[in-house]
Image (tube, rainbow, N blue to C red; front, side, top):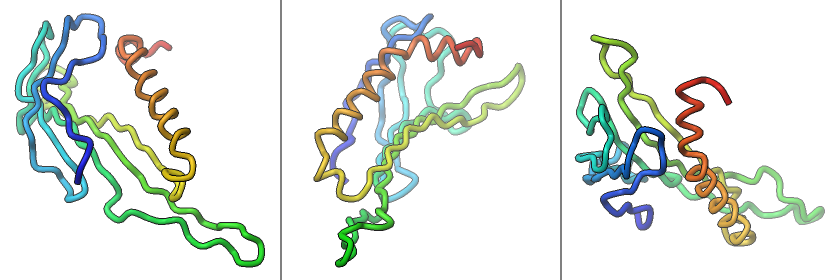
Length: 156
């Protein structure tokens, strides 16, 4: 599978309490043939209390494409309408082990971005798809610290 390779280290987005966070990635075996996975093998910057990947407390990032890419079905010869357009679903999943309380084991928590692309749209409307992805990832970077604060406080 080409693409979706990450350059290591990855510079983390802004979060309150983290100073210049970086994440050194090591290639890992993906959980499926249609994916790529890395684990966090070292931390950089100031991230007091953050942990690298271990078996019992994972810290991984996986990227997946559809196992079988779907194509646009033929249109109805009479109406020209295409019914039941399938989606090709792409995913990016970061897994992190979080400890809920003292003396408790880490619980693996997935943080998932799912991108369902209607078959054919990647060609017919590719610029709009790229614009949406640009907005999505740019907005996530822009609200990274605010999202962290919201997750910590429960207040939006």
